[in-house]
Image (cartoon, rainbow, N blue to C red):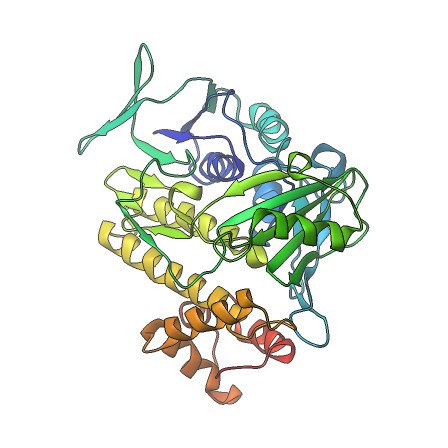
Length: 387
């Protein structure tokens, strides 16, 4: 079986390693243009990434941290979201990680070459077009083409959004990233609420990555930069920060015959709790089941769409509980999330299930995703609940 993964960002690497590991004797080709830049902020994961890296290429966050400047992540620290700050922990016996995604593809692909040999191929080419029929997918480059059985498309943000749902319940559309060349000495991801949104803080062994998230229809560039300088007691200008604009969206259809979208080609909401990593892993697992005829085409799309709605609901719920600030951004956020929850059938399923007596409770990933009941209850201690 020949599988192509287009793109070598974090999700491209996850997809390559997933199918090398779990479809033995398959030939997996990663196709990407070395000229295309990745975000390279320093990333936070869920529990699925360290597990995948260990199972596929024997990368250990503790022993091999020098390769990815990685640190162990044991939870998320919510600061300024309530009067008392609190940590949303990763439940034992799991852990997640922070890592340098500038280094991820190079280091993990070197390991994959040693373990999987000729079954792993890298092509440095620019993909122009994909065409498929019931038997194969043709990938067209500038001057030639290649044929594969299946393709995972991880090329990043779509060129247009006509085949995507734009999510109106989520308030962010921009980020200024502030890289600090000092090690981060903490084992959680900061979620630091500020007047105009919130900020993530990621500790690596060689630097820190701070992403100031806001809505530029509510907060001006200069207002955002001024607050960054206030928080960090610095004197930065726009040229000192990396600037990213985005919109929250999900694909109307993730799987199309022999091609599945993954990464930012499939869905992008925002980095709260790093939940996108778990969603991207689900896409790979469902595609594996589809390839092995354990899941129908329609079922894959239905389940991923339902999971995306649950993902959106969780983020909206966190926002709906507010922060210590009573500013224009937070008032706007409460308004749009409250509207989102009105007559929301997917959220009502989760809400009613979490209300049940604990004695009746049995683990049900579908109804409580992205967290199990224990994790939801820990979050409820930090946030006022709307249940």
